[in-house]
Length: 407
Image (cartoon, rainbow, N blue to C red):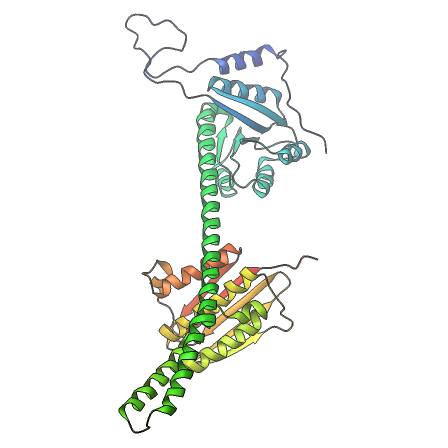
């Protein structure tokens, strides 16, 4: 593919063309004063507006007319915009230049003999979604202008109105800089959210391990000692009754500790994977809540990355908790499917549904809206999405996560 080069315009232009260029180079008249550089005569109001600050830009320009190029370059110089201009006359040159990158702005003619501005715009949006793109045309109807903006053009300017070009470029550059800063902020926030979730999951693992290895073992030792003390105390005495109550409380505490430890982080999720962890969790949840749950997992599901398994497990946890607390449904179904490029998790109930205002606006801590936001955030960090359909006959939650096995 040929390498695009900057094209120098010959000064040997026809006399009429040289006159147009000279007019384009003339400084604009101020609304409040004379032309810049002209002496101020008595009675002439002085300029009160300051010239715009100087910009240094690298611009890719799609234009096959040498005179139009020189007119635009002159206009930009007059607008205090210093630029390195790379010219392209057709699709091949344009794609080659675009592949090199490093541009602040694209200027494009609307119609060329074997290429057009809309096709160029589509190419740019595929490779550089945020790169400012300004279309310049001799005639551009309203429908064509709307189509350009829908496809992502930053602005469109008529060649008869090049006075708008400088302000349009400044505005496009400022908006591009703002988008770049916003994108950096969004990326930083996503990375922070990812780190917080990882730390949260790691803290859950640590607390679960601590409860299982230390607190639960101490409660078990306490229960054994109480059982031994129970055999030493006369069975009809008041002390025996107190010891029996202590034994029962120790057993209940041990059971609660095991349940809390498991809910914080099930060790089977790390050792055996998501399918086994879901089967174990669903069986226990159904037993405790009385909700009949049908679980269907595709065959040979296999293992997933740790973050993905944890996220999908938390989605199931949150969905079943919401069903138990809010929906009033006596049954639920869970489907976990592994496709060629995506993982699909679907949880459905036959309850009263989620109010529409809950789905639209943030809620207070402890409400269902916070749980939905947490699920969505976890999936977004995996480039996935959360889909919720809810009505009077029930709710369906779908988690879709892209996943492709690298050979």
